[in-house]
Amino acid sequence: MQKMPRRSLIMLATVWLLTSVGVTIVHAAELSQSSPPVVIAVAADGVQRATVTLDSYSYNPNHLIVEAGKPVELTLTSVTTIIPHNFIIKDPAGRLSVEQDVGAGKTVTITFTPTQPGIFPIYCDKRLWPLPSHRDKGMEGKLEVR
Ligand SMILES: [Cu+2]
Image (cartoon, rainbow, N blue to C red; front, side, top):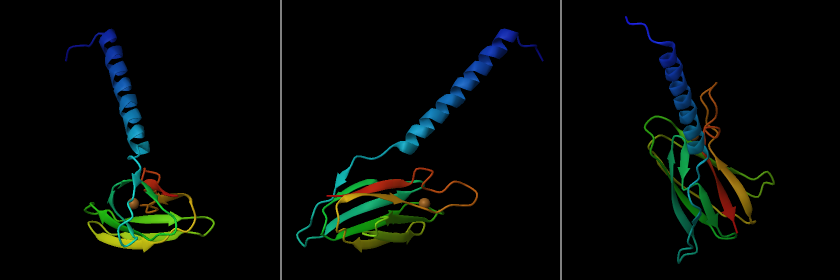
C-alpha cells in the first residue's frame, strides 16, 4: 500500500472531526425542535378536539393551546411499529393529571377538562433501562391553558 503523506492524513482527520461535530449539532437541533403552537378549536358541542401523533420520539403537534373550563378530547395516534409510548400531563399542584399508554400503532382517545390557566408539560416517561427516557430523547411538549 502506498504511504500517505502526513498532510493528507491531517486533512482527513480534520474533515472527519468537522463531520462528527456537524452531525452532533444537527441532532441536538432536531431534539429541541418544536412544532408551531396549535390553538384547538371549540366544536359546536363545546368540546375541544385534536389529534396528536406519537412517534419515536416526538408528539406532533407538541404545543397545544386550549381554553380552561371546557372539555378537551385528544385522539392519540401512535405511528410506531414496536416501541410503546405514553402521554402524561402532570401538574405538581394536582389540578391536572393525565396518564395514558399508547401501544405501538394504536389509537386511543382521552378526555379531560383543565380548570386553571397555566402551561403544563406533556411527556413520555417510557425508558429502556439504562437508556435515557423518551422525554430525554425529545418526546415532550406543552399544554397551554388560557
Ligand atoms: Cu415514548
